[in-house]
Amino acid sequence: MNTPFWTIAVLAALSISALVWGLYGLWRQHLDPRQKALAQRLQAATLNGPSDEAEPTLKLRPKRLLSQWEWAERGLQTVPGATQFDHFLLQTGLALSLAQALSLAAGLVLLALALGASLHWPVLLSLVVATLGPLLLIAFLQHRRTHRMALISQALPDALDLMARSMQAGHAFTSALQVAAKDAPPPLSHELRTVFEEINFGISAAQALQGLALRVASDDVRYFVVAVIIQSETGGNLAEILKNTAYLIRERQKIAGIVRVLSAEGRISAIILSLLPFALAALMGLLNPGFISRLWTDPMGLQLVYTSLTLMAIGILWMWRLIQIRV
Image 1 (tube, rainbow, N blue to C red):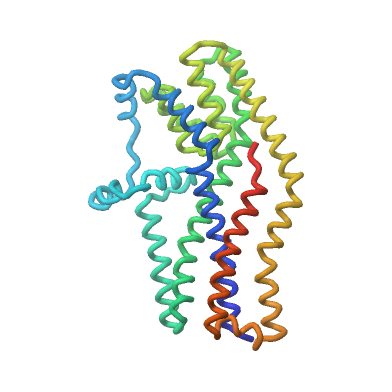
Image 2 (cartoon, rainbow, N blue to C red; image 1 turned 90 degrees about the horizontal axis):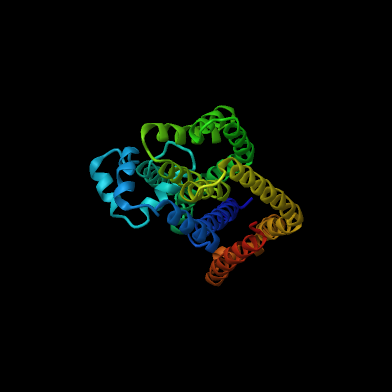
């Protein structure tokens, strides 16, 4: 059994999978046109008031620190993209600061390099393993964030209906938030309770809801936030608006479920095509190790491997982009 070949094949497969997952998550968060349009609408709705009135409410919310050390906090504030990545960590629901996440990633890199040096791995293999650690960490955080968003979006329509019925029974908006927070499942109950406590503390409803949209990267939550903020500025029956918003979210979820069923064949095909090259390489390594070993013993074979892995990463990313249909 050729141990170096199996090691390189497994690590290459994991690296490409983590890279594709991370690139798609970054694209969806920062480059998706629909995400940008919704974020601009939310910002325009929440910051429409005079700046001298909105500023005091912002000071009431405790500031989220990037690090517990002051010198690291000052340094991270100057790093481009540090605030956006901190928002990403906030949306995962984990009690993890930016400095802790960077320290964990650096620890994984150092551990991989130390392991490669102790086992006398080639330099390229050590670098691949060192890169795999942070990529797997980002993939785990992205999975945690996506799972949390799905739980909140699933429970949101029932919470909005409960808020609408509470308001029709005579409760104010903040009281309806408290009632929904008691009956909603976590993590939605925690988020609604945070909004209720912030409003009671003195933060305006618009600013508290803006914080909710920042902590939860869900389109459904942002629809709810935008609807409430616009109603507070223009007037109207808020209970009816919440009912209509809940109905809209349910219909979007139904359509998304239908799309997911119809695209199941495409997702299975993408999984098979992504794993097929590595499965064939493993099979050839078992049947004829001398033939497949030319890929890493011959310089031309190494160039073919590097080119193939690059093209495979592009192809896998493109396939998963095609089957991700947003409603």
